[in-house]
Length: 194
Image (cartoon, rainbow, N blue to C red; front, side, top):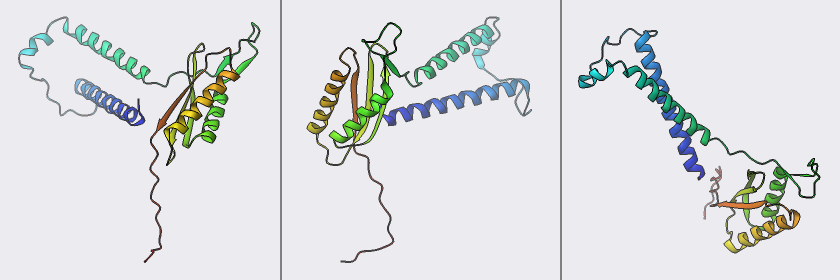
C-alpha cells in the first residue's frame, strides 16, 4: 500500500469512526435527554414501525451492532503495523540460543550500504516477516538522475552480502524505491536582472 493510499485509508477510517460515534451519542441523548430536550417524542417510520414493535427487534439490533463492532475492531487491528522480527538466532548457536543477530541494526547497515552504492535519498529501514523468514525492508527515494541498472546492481550486491554474512538463515532483502521527492522552492530576497 502506498503512503498516499495508507493516509487516505486512515482518514476514511477516522471520519467513519467519528461519524458513528456522533450518531451513537446523538441516539443516547435522544433516549435519555441529557443535553437537549428539543427532540420529538416519536419518530415516524412508516411501514417499518411494525418491525420495531416485534419482541425480537431489540435483540436483532443488539446482535447487528455487536457484529458491526467486532468487524470494525478486526478492521482496525488489521491496519496496525505488522510485527517486526527484532532478533534472529544463528544456526551455529547452542540450544540456549546465545548467538543472535540484531536485525534492526543489520537493516540499518544494509540501508547505509545501499546509500553508498546507489543514488538513493531518504533511506528508511525496518524488519518484517516471521522468525523463520525475516525480511529486511529498505524504502528509499530515487535521487535525481538515478538509473535503474545502478539500483539493481546495488540491491544485488547487498543481497549477496547478506547471503554470505548469514549463510544458514533465510534473511531476505526487500528494496522499495519511490520517485524522487520534489525539492521545495527556496525564497530569496534578491533579484537577478540580465
